[in-house]
Image 1 (cartoon, rainbow, N blue to C red):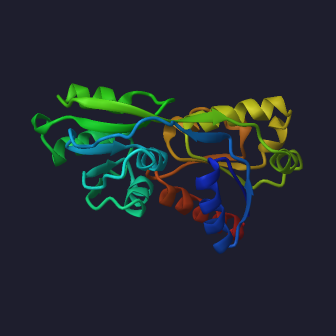
Image 2: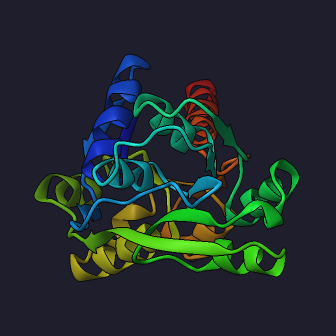
Length: 241
């Protein structure tokens, strides 16, 4: 299958390699570019744990601190894997979204033991901070990166325009909205109807109108592994047709 990947460059490269190993052809056109924020060194000493809702939060944080002794509470397996790769030793992951993570944190630690450091991006919903604050936790949010919008590249536009894309993988509501804008801008809305949308969550799927794709599928869990499982199911179903 020919699969359009819209993730930022670091994640897109890894995902494209995985797809190639499974026999798929990846078209990589990031719709977001991650820019890490420079600034003074960050001390983790006053916090009982680090919160991370993306691998980018981990990568951004480790540019600003050499400390690795604090527990990391990650939203899911991809973020947890990034923390492991960066040398953190105590890692828990909620295998869900921001609200799932908040509820898990409540089970893992007590609010009275001290504040939490959230390694955050600029463009976020605020769900995690709100949910944990409502549970009695004190959150210190460090905005460590920003995701800047990009346009679809010429390769992706040509593939969409000719109906050669079998599936589009969409990992965030923001990238989904940008994708819709790009379809209109490049006047390829009609061609996208031949492809299936693989969405990491119901919120992502809700961005689209049914007629914009041949089918819209939602991953069983909001993580990379579930997205890959969704692609395998689609591939098997098409092979049987």
